[in-house]
Image (cartoon, rainbow, N blue to C red; front, side, top):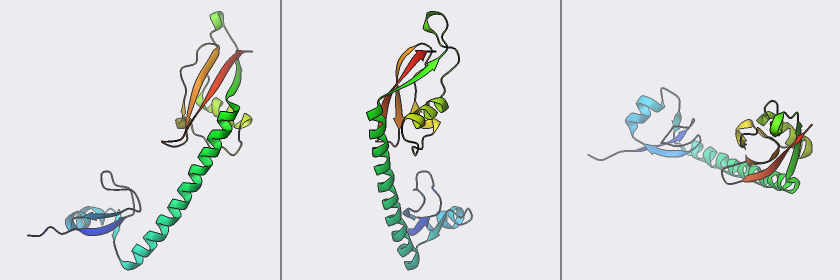
Length: 155
Protein backbone atom coordinates (compact mmCIF):
# COMPACT_ATOMS: atom_id res chain seq x y z
CA UNK A 1 0.00 0.00 0.00
CA UNK A 2 1.20 3.44 -0.81
CA UNK A 3 0.60 6.37 1.45
CA UNK A 4 -1.34 9.03 -0.34
CA UNK A 5 -1.40 12.66 0.58
CA UNK A 6 -3.30 15.53 -0.92
CA UNK A 7 -2.45 19.21 -0.89
CA UNK A 8 -4.90 21.71 0.53
CA UNK A 9 -4.97 25.42 1.29
CA UNK A 10 -6.17 26.16 4.82
CA UNK A 11 -9.08 28.57 5.17
CA UNK A 12 -8.58 28.72 8.97
CA UNK A 13 -5.67 28.07 11.30
CA UNK A 14 -5.49 24.52 12.65
CA UNK A 15 -3.23 23.67 15.61
CA UNK A 16 -0.25 21.47 14.66
CA UNK A 17 -1.20 21.70 10.96
CA UNK A 18 -0.73 25.28 9.85
CA UNK A 19 -2.03 28.81 9.73
CA UNK A 20 -4.69 30.33 7.54
CA UNK A 21 -3.53 30.45 3.93
CA UNK A 22 -0.84 27.77 4.33
CA UNK A 23 -0.39 25.06 1.72
CA UNK A 24 -0.15 21.68 3.50
CA UNK A 25 -0.23 17.96 2.68
CA UNK A 26 -2.69 15.75 4.55
CA UNK A 27 -4.32 12.34 4.22
CA UNK A 28 -7.50 12.11 2.12
CA UNK A 29 -9.55 10.73 5.03
CA UNK A 30 -8.61 13.65 7.27
CA UNK A 31 -9.58 16.04 4.49
CA UNK A 32 -12.89 14.31 3.77
CA UNK A 33 -13.95 13.70 7.40
CA UNK A 34 -12.65 16.78 9.19
CA UNK A 35 -11.51 19.61 6.93
CA UNK A 36 -14.43 19.63 4.46
CA UNK A 37 -17.33 19.40 6.99
CA UNK A 38 -15.87 22.22 9.09
CA UNK A 39 -14.91 24.25 5.99
CA UNK A 40 -11.33 24.61 7.20
CA UNK A 41 -9.67 24.25 3.81
CA UNK A 42 -9.93 23.67 0.08
CA UNK A 43 -8.26 21.29 -2.31
CA UNK A 44 -5.45 22.74 -4.40
CA UNK A 45 -6.20 23.68 -8.01
CA UNK A 46 -4.19 25.74 -10.49
CA UNK A 47 -6.42 28.79 -9.93
CA UNK A 48 -6.20 28.47 -6.15
CA UNK A 49 -2.40 28.15 -6.31
CA UNK A 50 -2.24 31.36 -8.33
CA UNK A 51 -4.54 33.11 -5.83
CA UNK A 52 -2.47 31.64 -2.97
CA UNK A 53 0.74 33.10 -4.42
CA UNK A 54 -0.87 36.54 -4.83
CA UNK A 55 -2.14 36.46 -1.24
CA UNK A 56 1.27 35.39 0.07
CA UNK A 57 2.93 38.32 -1.71
CA UNK A 58 0.35 40.74 -0.26
CA UNK A 59 0.85 39.29 3.22
CA UNK A 60 4.61 39.65 2.88
CA UNK A 61 4.24 43.32 1.90
CA UNK A 62 1.82 43.96 4.80
CA UNK A 63 4.17 42.25 7.24
CA UNK A 64 7.13 44.33 6.07
CA UNK A 65 5.12 47.56 6.47
CA UNK A 66 3.96 46.47 9.92
CA UNK A 67 7.52 45.68 11.04
CA UNK A 68 8.70 49.03 9.68
CA UNK A 69 5.95 50.85 11.64
CA UNK A 70 6.89 48.90 14.78
CA UNK A 71 10.54 49.93 14.46
CA UNK A 72 9.54 53.59 13.97
CA UNK A 73 7.25 53.46 17.03
CA UNK A 74 9.97 51.76 19.07
CA UNK A 75 12.46 54.51 18.18
CA UNK A 76 9.93 57.26 19.01
CA UNK A 77 9.22 55.76 22.43
CA UNK A 78 12.84 55.07 23.29
CA UNK A 79 13.80 58.63 22.33
CA UNK A 80 11.19 59.97 24.78
CA UNK A 81 12.42 57.44 27.39
CA UNK A 82 10.73 58.86 30.52
CA UNK A 83 7.03 59.34 31.14
CA UNK A 84 5.76 60.99 34.30
CA UNK A 85 2.50 60.35 36.07
CA UNK A 86 1.29 62.12 39.23
CA UNK A 87 -0.68 60.30 41.93
CA UNK A 88 -1.95 61.09 45.41
CA UNK A 89 0.40 59.70 48.03
CA UNK A 90 -0.20 58.28 51.49
CA UNK A 91 2.22 57.29 54.20
CA UNK A 92 5.73 56.16 53.30
CA UNK A 93 5.32 57.03 49.62
CA UNK A 94 2.51 54.56 48.90
CA UNK A 95 0.20 55.70 46.13
CA UNK A 96 -3.59 55.71 46.26
CA UNK A 97 -5.33 53.72 43.58
CA UNK A 98 -3.78 51.68 40.87
CA UNK A 99 -1.97 52.71 37.72
CA UNK A 100 -3.63 50.63 35.02
CA UNK A 101 -2.29 49.59 31.64
CA UNK A 102 -5.03 51.67 30.01
CA UNK A 103 -3.81 54.79 31.86
CA UNK A 104 -0.22 54.09 30.76
CA UNK A 105 -1.37 53.69 27.14
CA UNK A 106 -3.22 57.04 27.32
CA UNK A 107 -0.08 58.68 28.73
CA UNK A 108 2.10 57.21 25.97
CA UNK A 109 -0.33 58.31 23.27
CA UNK A 110 -0.56 61.85 24.66
CA UNK A 111 3.20 62.32 24.89
CA UNK A 112 4.33 60.03 22.10
CA UNK A 113 2.72 59.18 18.83
CA UNK A 114 -1.04 59.60 18.48
CA UNK A 115 -1.04 57.03 15.66
CA UNK A 116 0.49 54.41 17.94
CA UNK A 117 -1.85 51.44 18.38
CA UNK A 118 -1.28 49.64 21.68
CA UNK A 119 -3.32 47.10 23.61
CA UNK A 120 -3.20 46.26 27.30
CA UNK A 121 -1.68 42.87 26.49
CA UNK A 122 1.38 44.45 24.86
CA UNK A 123 2.50 46.13 28.11
CA UNK A 124 4.54 44.39 30.77
CA UNK A 125 4.33 46.56 33.87
CA UNK A 126 5.72 45.70 37.31
CA UNK A 127 3.43 46.16 40.28
CA UNK A 128 3.41 49.87 41.10
CA UNK A 129 2.64 50.67 44.75
CA UNK A 130 5.10 53.42 45.63
CA UNK A 131 6.67 56.55 44.20
CA UNK A 132 9.67 55.97 41.98
CA UNK A 133 10.75 54.84 38.55
CA UNK A 134 9.50 51.64 36.96
CA UNK A 135 10.57 50.01 33.67
CA UNK A 136 7.67 49.31 31.31
CA UNK A 137 8.25 46.89 28.47
CA UNK A 138 6.16 47.27 25.31
CA UNK A 139 6.02 44.25 22.98
CA UNK A 140 5.23 45.28 19.42
CA UNK A 141 6.04 41.82 18.03
CA UNK A 142 7.97 38.79 19.24
CA UNK A 143 11.27 40.39 18.21
CA UNK A 144 10.58 44.12 18.61
CA UNK A 145 10.24 45.47 22.15
CA UNK A 146 10.71 48.94 23.58
CA UNK A 147 11.47 49.77 27.19
CA UNK A 148 10.41 53.07 28.72
CA UNK A 149 10.66 54.45 32.24
CA UNK A 150 7.46 55.36 34.09
CA UNK A 151 8.17 57.86 36.85
CA UNK A 152 5.51 58.09 39.57
CA UNK A 153 5.51 61.50 41.28
CA UNK A 154 3.43 62.92 44.16
CA UNK A 155 0.49 65.15 43.27
